[in-house]
Image (cartoon, rainbow, N blue to C red; front, side, top):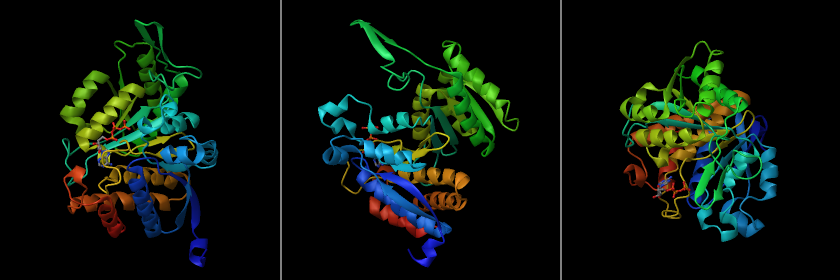
Length: 362
Ligand code: ATP
């Protein structure tokens, strides 16, 4: 360690490449984060590479080795590349995906997904700038809403049932995430539910969010039925700031908002608890373009910026500066006409990444 790096505050961040284009966009993201952190000064990242996905099946006989989970337990932040679990050997296909298992194991209850147009990139809603805060642990998601067994079952071959779970505790913590976030943004939270039909479950969600909202008097609150919200996002999505909702509604609305504001290649997200956060692009492993050098790294780079932003609030404010530097450089690169093929450009993953690095701190 040189004298200069010895004076920096070092922070360990996990890095898990995953499958398909993960092998391209994860290294690209690491390059951008290293350069941004160096530009911000004061801090340095010590990367902790961990095995996952197809490579982990080869090396450890499982897509999510115990040693990966044990190492993540000692970290508060990591970057996860996409996984292509459909390509794994049959014995691994029935189980929860590696990302899903990590989310459940560490109770990463908040899926935070911004939908913000990037000037120069194609966008149906160029004025949109909102964040969907999705409850990630219960609702109707059969793979995660039970301690044991599945929330979906068939008493006879012709009858299928699904159990929805909504608890006050889970509503409270996701509501705090949403109102905290809104108080640092445009100070408006929209609670999305379907209490006219699912009056006990999504009604509880709405009521608890409203109760928590009363603790944040500076934040304006309204609520919408999910069907009306889908229409409003298309018609006047630019009016919304933070949208808080239960698991399945959030899954669907966040995809809708991301697609209206940009595209799969630009849709960032983190999954977080109070103490841990995982940056994970909303898109999959894109096996159709893997290895071709055409993948758009923007979604993962912006997810990593969200991760740094959290570290800025908890560990050292230089990380917040690094996050802003990354966001500005990504915007400036796309606005200057450098973009990958999915955004209508001709840049390779490496060329786009070099364009971002060249603009860091500019
Ligand atoms: P999953 O079910 O794992 O989310 P999927 O097959 O539904 O995966 P993706 O892997 O996200 O979806 O790919 C959908 C389409 O979008 C593919 O044609 C893919 O090439 C494209 N795509 C996804 N991510 C990117 C990216 N970062 N850059 C360029 N194209 C992408």
